[in-house]
Image 1 (cartoon, one colour):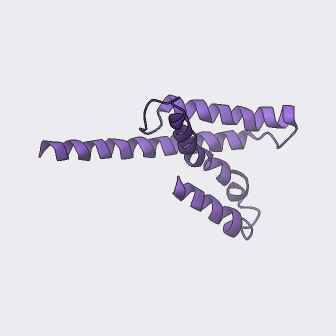
Image 2 (tube, helix red, strand yellow; image 1 turned 180 degrees about the horizontal axis):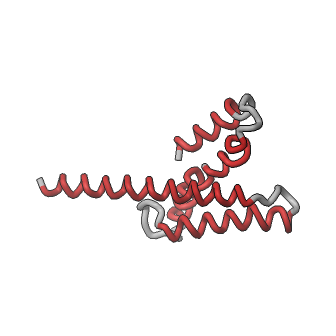
Image 3 (cartoon, one colour; image 1 turned 90 degrees about the vertical axis):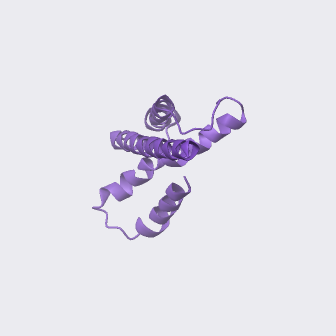
Length: 124
């Protein structure tokens, strides 16, 4: 999470201002790609503190998909059409889901490796 916040800040204030405009991915979707890995752990931590989540393990696939779907709906449909804020962009939705799936894979692989190491320690 801190890594994503750092990358976001570096992109927003150092890279984006000097990047050529034909680097569309950096200008349009990189920030959206970082939404799930940056925000979901914080949201789930808050839910845990409110006793609305029963564990502190990595986000489950349903949690990742539910939050990503909700943010996609809110930022790309509700915001532009109802609140008249922002612009609906299917590229943003693709970036949200790509970031969510990639971060989910990383979270689950790291959790699997950690539990394998912990199991090996207990067998010694």
